[in-house]
Length: 205
Image 1: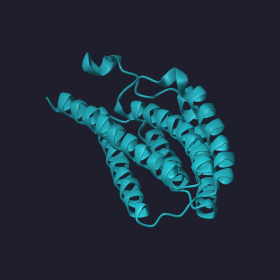
Image 2: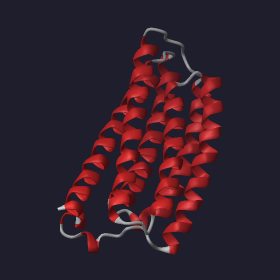
Image 3: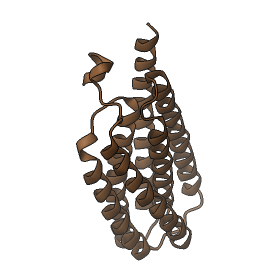
Image 4: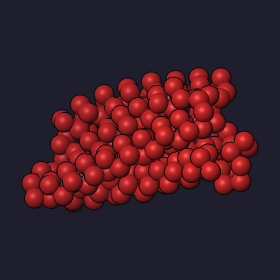
């Protein structure tokens, strides 16, 4: 990946087409956050709550990315590090609340999970297709791609959780998927922060 060979060759997001794509994806993510918060509350689904939080984090991530485009590498790297840190905090919250729910099992509504999961999956596939051409770049741009990837994987997992809850009549599939999503947030946050620190070190050396 170019980030290890020379920052001058790495896409930094300074492209009007990329900016427009980000604005569209930001709107999609904020809308789905609102939808999934309501659905998570009604269905008692931990996986939907985790996915709603993922949509919100992505919307914030994309907004930060939009504002630091064209800024010096040091600023872009620091912004990416903060986004990685927020993703880490989100992972801790999801994993912690999932552990809590293990001791307070309440079977979620599988049909609501399925319908909302399908809506979220379609929204994320649309976002991935919009951002596909910008899947490489500096830590700031790469964080956008990692969030998009997380969304798509997460929504496929929510759909599996819905089928699992429907088939077993228990909350365990929902909790397992929430735990997997929390772990995915954790690994992505580490990748973003590691690349950000590498760029900051390269810039200062």
